Length: 551
Image (cartoon, rainbow, N blue to C red):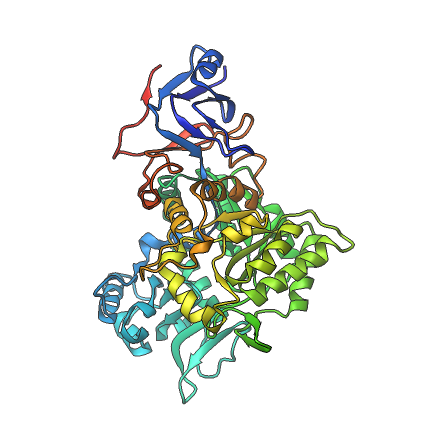
């Protein structure tokens, strides 16, 4: 006998092609059987159907985060929280590190996360001597909130073989003093060995405990209404762990893997047989695969790759990990092997290079129809790049949650003199151009709650009190679409998730307010009362009344 449950007397935003608003939904086993009126659903429900009266509460499709770093975020509870809070000094950060490492066995790795030196006076960074004193018996690696730079103590540098004789790695910088000695600071791909070694050492210390951390993090995300995500940087070690965890039934919802090279910022070569095997073979219902992640431009030391002409003067700044020709070859090769691509591109030149590559494949001999994504486009030229994205069918994965906290830095530090030519985190103009835009958190780098992402996109508010490019604000209905059905398409799951329609998976979130009708500033206060995945409740809120079960 089919297992049935229903919600009636609700405000249901289906996010279908016509943005239909319904009042009841019938779930049969793992799928949606009917969406319509309360009368229609009650008439179709069987005698054993469990019926919940939502009493006017709002139901939306489960949120999907198409760019989240689950493999790294799950270790947060056993790492050191080094985020800067009002009034903090570098001494507070160092004391937190000291407390966390004091009881560790000697030689056990530890990492810190969330550090933001720009929030300290003078953009204060920890010195090598300070980290050595804070963690004298353990290799310690501190990551900044972007994960694009870090600081290591002497023990950590020694463990991965970084010293005064080390050459500069591809795609990164080991910062050295005037005598050629490492200062402990590492930029971009130079963090690779520290990220890889610290993750493996911490995760492998107790695999069963690590699996519990994975489940714990997924329950936390479910509490935000998230019913699916893409892990945007899956290394071989994380892929192996995921495969093991999947066999043991640890995934509460579907995770799409975006596979990187051997390390987080490693150089991609899709021709390698072991990489192709990893991308194609790690696949199940809960653990999806088939996509590779590429980094086009770095954030440090000079910011993303930007190029503009103004008043007859051409200006260029930033760096690139690959030449335009290399990006094109990687995309062509991946497409020929049936591998989808998601490419990190922050500056407008990097976005153009990616679009050139996608155009070569879309209109070349292969005439590919496969999913092609651009991640970020933090500082870009939507008036020219938007129509190209739309014409090529490229999905843009945007991070509006960063507008409030990081937007002013993007505006002043990265866009700089290109203020008239470039836009910070464009959204509305791209949607108007016909681009399918989805919202992602880039967590744990940025705010993770979909409520915060949608609020940021609707208000464009920043911590300075001045909105960032307010003409790029979207409506609440557009924000919801970007967080559900568009995000499902970016995760290559648009046929099964992202909207509440008959035949799709029964993934939904019950909310305490109608985010399409409340005041914009109330969106980020949204509370998720219940989260349902494949017809089963995986989260219930203890802070508010739930829909009354009638039978």
